[in-house]
Length: 243
Length: 260
Image 1 (cartoon, rainbow over the protein chains, first blue to last red):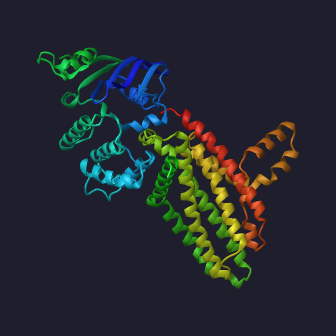
Image 2: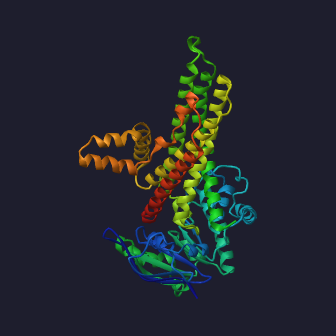
Image 3: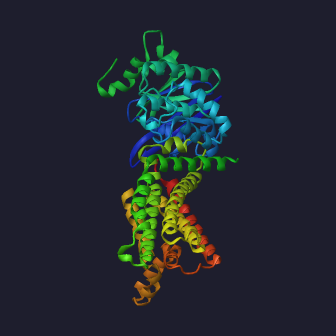
């Protein structure tokens, strides 16, 4: 069953076609990697999935409804590409802020927040304001806030950026655990090796279109290929880089 | 607690934490105290009526600092959200843009009122020490109307922040607030001296601009004049509420149209 569906979606900004007839679907309980070179249209697509941007044409269904409806966002956990949060807040306060926006009570937020702080490796940093956090630590905060209200769907924009190897392993474990609980994850990334390790499916975008959409088994083919090779064959041909 | 009440609660709390942790208020309060406190004790040339001038100066500072804090809080909220991209995780939560506008408004207003309480506390100490007058009905009315003024300034600052840069917004809002405070009451008189086009323009300005002069009870407080009717106070506060609502309605429209 699909929880994210896009049909012939188009979006342009001042004559630049950011997304051009994009069609794909993401099934419940799957991890899908959303790959592509810079400017391929990944972030615009994510913004449309979150209802931030309205498509010029086509249809988007998230969790059975229109993504611009406020109620749809109850079922979405979003992690932005650039991890900037309110620097004067502490991590627990930030989680209480986002939890409150999701309608959670303090009694629900506090135990969840302390579990998540430990889980993303921020124990010991609870009493520091976010302005003192490194980029990697802010990325961990981003993961925690996306997980806080235990949504059905996770839309993560470049979640591995800035994470150290240990945090990457922790985050992969978190994603695997979410998958085991039937949660759906769509994440954009430039980290092809990470995508290959954890994804069920991969969508490769080029010039606003999905030029590859298949499972990671299909990527591997007879075992002679890997995602990097496929990616270079598709994207690299324009840049003179080929596998 | 309903969903919207919870959302308002966290938005207000975050604004208060911002004001106190950024330490803007501490700086302004210390500056205010340094300027105000000597006035409580100084008696230049042994002139007995000098307290009136000191009183007026102190109130002017309370007005100036409170407007400064209010503009500082209200005008930077949305520009910061867009510049630092915190608007994305915020709007990715199940919260409507209208709720965000209202929550940010109430947050900025709460922060400004909390600062105002401190300023009035300093002013009361000043008057108490100097004149042995710790409380008067006019003082309560002046505080209530001052809150009304902050309601209007916060709404204008917040709405302007969705259209203008912070510096342009602060400059224009300050011009409007102090321009109307000084000349607002004289606009109809001035309009009647103009040609038809000028008259229409000035009357439109009179109708549209915020009447900050309605909220000013400083002269009454300084000279110890009697309190005004509480009915008048209620009407002025209703005006503040209506004006703020109109501004927030525009802010909601602007945020909905804002490119993310």
